[in-house]
Amino acid sequence: MKYLKLLFLIVIINFNLGAQNKLKLENIGLANNVYVIKNVNIIPMTTDNKIITNAIVVIKNEKISSINSDSIPKKGKIIDGRGKWLIPGLIDMHVHTNADLNFKENSATQGATFFMNTQDVMTTYIVNGVTTIFELGGRVEHFGQRNEIAKGKVIGPRMAIASMLNGGDNNGGRIVNNASDARQAVRSAKAEGYNFIKAYSDLNIESFHAIMDEAQKQGLKVVGHIPDVFKGKTKEAFVPNFGLVAHAEEFSKQIRNKEKTEKDAQTFAFMSKANNTWLIPNLIAIKTIRDQVQSIDSIRLMKTLKYVHPLLQDKWLNANNYNKHSSPEFLNYLDSLITFHKQLVVAFKKAGVPMVAGTDAGVSGVVTGFALHDELELLVEAGLSNEEVLISATRRPSEWLGINEMVGTVEIGKYADLILLNANPLENIRNTREIRGVFVNGKWVDKNKIEEMLSVLADWNTLMKEGYEWKNRREY
Ligand SMILES: [Zn+2]
Image 1: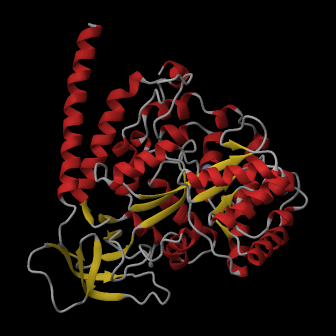
Image 2: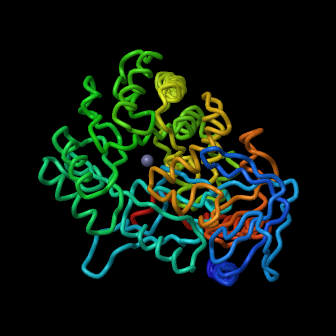
Image 3: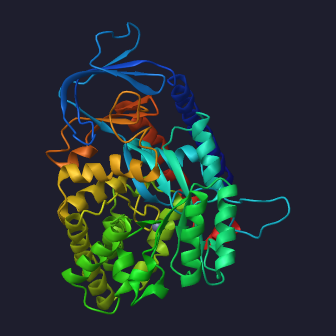
């Protein structure tokens, strides 16, 4: 009986892989097509952001080749844009993407032992219009994923990748505990192909400052936590080339055991402004953590849970550390963070510090791709306008990453990373979810294909559910 079941599973899996491969081949086939979007309303997200109504947009060789030009190519797929809105593809500035990993001991000839299908990992970004991501826990496997996307084997977002540097002795990332090791680690990361450095919580002051200085010399920007050692002297962390704070929580951690006030928020905003350090507010992660501390049902009832790898579904549901440590005090603390982080967003807006949208997707309950739309909604709730929120997920992050000549706005010559929406997101930010189709590097992924990609993913996850348990991961 057991073998019959296994045989059945194998047949189904093969069938599914077949469907998946077909999907990929179709994607490759679309690579060099010409598209003409007719009668569309463009929200360009340029500095003046003047809306262009009833426009014709031509996409050719992966780029936006014309807007409202008289010469329209005769051959090309026509897309009806009537009553629809075209915005730049979204950028998530803080993600942790699943990739192959090793649950066992390394040996001479063996690397990863547990494998993730790259298309499955990238699907949730693409169907949500997330066409660029900033990976803040970069590993060599992420470079592999980026290559698969570049080769056209996988339809996925552009990936900026940061290498993590940390202190202590075994905290994950590259460990550095003095200035000279820190400088060497930055140079090594650059040699390996990283364009960004992520500084983490356990660094000491000497190493943190050395990282900032060396990274600047090497032309790498730094995103980071504010290491715990700066508590009580937060300002000393704000040195040149500390370009971006990875969470609002970094500020609340600096005053963990004190009452957090609007005045504190202001002080941090001025500190950041003076140093030209931008902020990823990252509101959705704390909200999601709070909800699962209160009840694991918040995970169980998630509509997007079926798009999460079954191993992680099991971890989130049955080995949930947040829920395990549930207490009224913990809930109160998280509530105080939620309040303070909104105050931080308001203070940073007032001080004129640029903010960029990021989700920390990969954290328990925060689903890649989908979470960015939740984050945008929370930023509006915190006090940003719909337009400011859209800026924070398009043009601004492209500027920080230094790819604003390529993406981030709807303009002639830019790569066609675009979302066609059924409704205007300037009227209601929830309309970023009303996706008619997505252009990913000039490839059109329409609503039908989106549904197909999602069902391939959900079917596989559901089918494999019984096969994965977090507590058995060392055996995988
Ligand atoms: Zn993170």
